[in-house]
Length: 607
Image 1 (cartoon, rainbow, N blue to C red):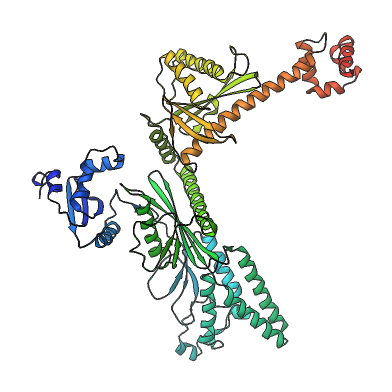
Image 2 (cartoon, rainbow, N blue to C red; image 1 turned 120 degrees about the horizontal axis):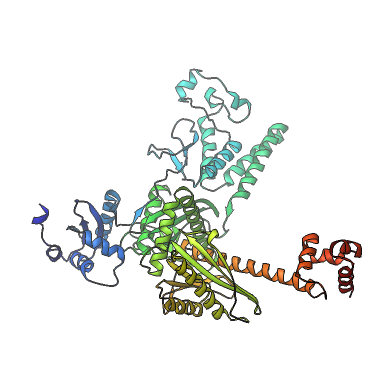
């Protein structure tokens, strides 16, 4: 049907049934851009076209692109959920929650073959082999493999050890046999039953249970010692030590919590991070984080449901523990039969959830750092968009200036201005100010003077004005800056950074009159604003210390009768510090400033 022949969107909505089902939004190119489920198709779809302030910017952009609405009627909400999930996976619509994690992770595979090998792989093949992982890093995977090969003697060769080939004496023992790392099944010196016992121990290790390996090694060591084979007993003793070392490196969770899976969710603007922690036999045996795009109209419950399903199918080997710890219940539990979801409020389970959240934050920080290094333009664009969105600015704040005052009980008042361009400090544009018109500790008056001086000078020079001004203080300082800008006829957005009792960044204010902006303390935006605040504070305090120190040095020497500025400079140029002037004898001082002044200096310090 040509586009002109299609019914109007209102007509398409009116023709939808009140039955449960799945709807699809299609754009001009014929691409399905969103898939959703509904208890009543007509009621749900019509809600998109009602003018409402509750609609997010993404929803408004989505609605503008819709030219056709398709639908599929099903028998129940459950069927709608399952069909929606299937369509999202196959179609990958732009405005749905989607997994962004396309990384191929390393696995450990126990091959399905005669005398199975234990190997590393990045390809998951449904061939009957057992796969364990994936591992968050190759280093982690290699450490596990190295431990297994150190403790359990399995073959590493590529030979086909079918019984008929071994019976034909086709093979000979290799170096690994002589080193004690393999028991030579290739020449019939080890049966498949004995080998299968060792493979079973490997599987136990990969599942987090070290007890079968310990029992085996202790038994073999005792047997070798009983037969007076002390070198062999020592070899088993070394393997037991390696086992203890490996167990010491694993993260022990609790003697009470044995088998459990933990999921946490960390929303972050247009993406979210879901962390998965697998605990078996009281130890953490796997930690993984995946990244999702948040899509349109998605809440945290939907995101968590999708992430858990993806992790179960692609990372957790298709299975979940009978108990799963989560920060909130998934939007549906129908996809996870036989699983109990727990939202902990206290105790060890809450500590496990916090461990998962911390892992997600660390992974997100690493990813953002990599983005900053590998693609700084994209990182800056993302950061500037976040500032613009949270402060409701008309444009990205590519040029930001922040002010701070510093004094000690009103003495030596100074102020500083730091400049950030494209999210980074522009130190060559930093400026110090000596307060000229204010006496005593009056922060507001000092801020008024500094801001006025700064922007009257920029106006006189025809220089670029900032896109955003930040005050290192609350509403009072913001009000002073607003007053000065109005006086100068400038329209520049203002934000304020307030600190808590511990002098840490606590809240963000914007606009006039100022309103509180809620941002997560873990978000990159919060860290960026805290960095600006720390930088302006550091710059102001260092200047104040420098001025205070200089004033102290000069004030002490200038107290000496008959010693002026030139003499003070001569003394400091030669001796560097007041202490060295104090320690100098009369001859050294006389050679530098003359006998008369030398006597006065010595007399002053001898008092």
